Image (cartoon, rainbow, N blue to C red; front, top):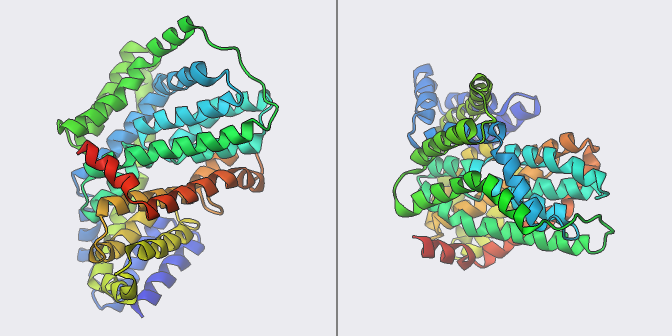
Amino acid sequence: MTVVIFLSVLLGAIILGIPVAFALLVCGVALMLHLDLFDSQILAQQIVSGADSFSLMAIPFFILAGELMNEGGLSKRIIDLPMKLVGHKRGGLGFVAILAAMIMASLSGSAVADTAAVAAMLLPMMKTTGYPLDRSAGLIGTAGIIAPIIPPSIPFIVFGVASGVSITKLFLAGIFPGVMMGICLGLLWWWQAKRLDLMTFSKATRQDLCVSFKNSVWALLLPVIIIGGFRSGIFTPTEAGAVATFYALIVSLFVYRELKIKDLYKVILAAAKTTAVVMFLVAAANVTGWLITVAELPTMLTELLEPLLGSPTTLLLVIMLAVFIIGMVMDLTPTVLILTPVLMPLIQEAGIDPVYFGVLFILNTSIGLITPPVGNVLNVITGVSKLPFDQAAKGILPYMIMMVLLLLLFVFVPSLILEPLSWML
């Protein structure tokens, strides 16, 4: 009965159009009434404690760093370097989009922000030079979901806080899968591009490459600083967020000089709005997560799937299928916040590495960002490209299938994630 109330109230509230954070609170109140635990003071305490975490402070820092980079010219220079490197090849703008998305992912950790930035700069150019708009939009949208995998990843921070798994290990574990995502997209785009008659650009001279690298080197140093800091233990993910924000501010104001003091209010306000949405979601989900534990739903799920505990691969396939279906109708952050407390006891019972599971889980929920009908990244790319929704979804389909196949490869070959992680620890 508890499960029925949990699902019916949550899904019913979402179907009615209630924002997910408020839907989680409504679901929490319904569970409290059902369990005869309703107390407004406990409700308030759980909301406050949900956002009261040192690790969560990394989220506003990285969001602000991303806003500063977009406004301060770092993003623009990051796209210029791949343009000089591979823009002259057949389908070169597609390779530029993939490389730019990977570099941007290592700076902001936000799929929506990275997709919007890359699409706004490259899609008009791709359209003008005769690239198929639906395929181009699909490629950029799918490249955008690399951001939650390559550090610094905001979803990894949320998952780490919700599960108690080391955020630093999650960040390091995401590097190789993120690179593999880019390689797979590059291979698929190469196979498509060689069958199309696409305009090529003149090859950049060595001097052009040197100038472009010199202009972008300050932006490229940021992921080196962040990952190097994790690897050496100099700072935690939260401290890395503060370092990234300070670095982006200094470079934007005094090196590139594209950010003016008068623009800071607008940048900080935009970051604050995004942060408020994410943090309120986390706070509201803490109420539901606490009640899920009190109601012993993880124990019920463990008993239900107990026959699969002896076969971790089969268990993971069942979980990944369920997460994929849920991700089609729910955004990434609430999916992580709702399912993590339910699934982690099961994962621990089955003896599955929690860091490995975290990477699979976030990759799966990231694919949900490009699946209709709710996918946020799909909606962003639809808006920027001005394509009808069905055409944008059709254009993204082959790349989404590639990401699903890659996810299955990681499920069947865990060493692809765990071995590179062991090299970095």
